[in-house]
Image 1 (cartoon, protein in one colour):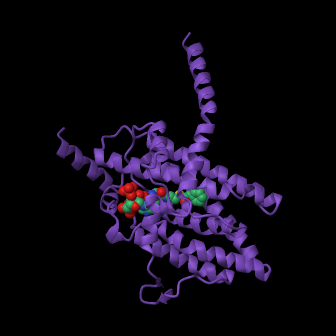
Image 2 (cartoon, helix red, strand yellow):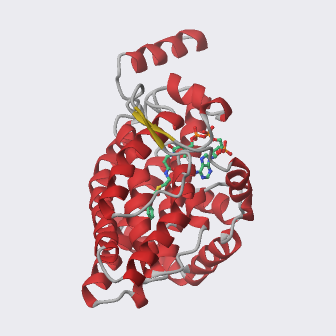
Image 3 (cartoon, rainbow, N blue to C red):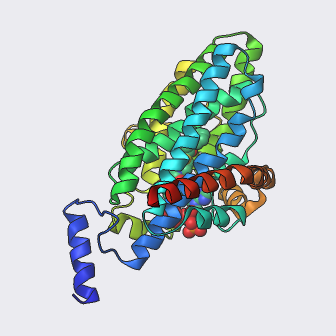
Length: 312
Ligand code: FAQ
C-alpha cells in the first residue's frame, strides 16, 4: 500500500474512534508526537515525587506520613506504566531517561516550584492532582491503546490523591487562624502555576492541531483550563479561602468564570529551565539515577543468569 493510502486508512480509523495499537501502522510524526508527550508525562510523574517526597519525614502525624508515602509511591507507579507505554512505540527506557537527564525532554512546569509548608502538600494534592485529572480524564480516550489504558488506572489513583489533598486543606482551613493563613498562602502560590499545567493558550500551542486531528487530545488546553477553574472555585469558597485573582468573576452567559491572564512570561521561563527549582530537581534526579546504578547492574546480572539457566 502506498504512503497516502496508509495515511488515509490511519485517519479513517481514528475518525471511527478506533484505537491504534503498537503493531499497527502509524505515521512517523504520530509516533514522535506520542513519544514526546508520553515521556514528558512519565518524567512529570517521576520528578513530581520530589516536592512531595520532601515532606515524608516531616508529615505532622503517622497517619499523614503513611498516606503521603503511599501517594508518592503511586506516582512512581504511574511513571513506570507510562515509560512502558512509550517503550511500546520503539524507544528504550535508557534513551528516555537520557533525554530527561540531559535536559532535552521536558517535564511539567509545576514541579519546579518549592513545597515550603505542610499545607503545600494539601495544595499539591488538591490543585496539582486536580489539574492532572482534568487533563487525564480525556486521555483515557486518547487514540493510542497502551497510553489510554495506563490512564484508566492512573486516573483512579489521582482521584484519591486529589481527595487527600483537599482533606488536608479542609483541616487547615477550619483550624486555627495561623493554619487557615497557611492554607491561604499555599493557595496563593499554587493557583497560577496549576493553571499553567494545561499548557500555553490555544492560539500559542504548536502541538495542538495534530494532537486534536490524531485524537491524542480530545479537548484543547484552554477548554480544560476553563473547566478546572469552574470546578475548583466552588471548592475554594467551600474552604472559606480566596482565589488570588482580582479578575475572577462568574459569567452567566458562558456559565463559567472569567479569570485573569496567566503570566505566560513566567511559564516560558520555567519550561526553559529557569524556574525556582529546575536545577535542584534535575540534579536530584540525576544523582538518584547514579546512586541506583548498582541496583540496575544486579538486576541485569540476575536476569542474564536466569536466561542462561532457562536456555540450558
Ligand atoms: N510544563 O503545543 P503545546 C501530574 C510544553 S502529571 C512543561 O500545548 P502539548 C501527576 C510542551 O511540551 C502532569 N512544558 O504542547 C502528579 C511543548 O513543548 P515541546 C503532567 C509544557 O503537548 C501530580 C510546548 O510547551 N501531565 O501532575 C507544559 O500539545 C502530583 C508547547 O505546548 C501531562 O504530561 C507544562 N505545563 O500540550 C505527579 C499530561 N505545557 O514538547 C506528582 C500529558 C506545555 O514541543 C504529584 N500531556 N508544555 O518541546 C499533555 O496533555 C500535553 O502534553 C500538555 C501540553 C497539555 C501538557
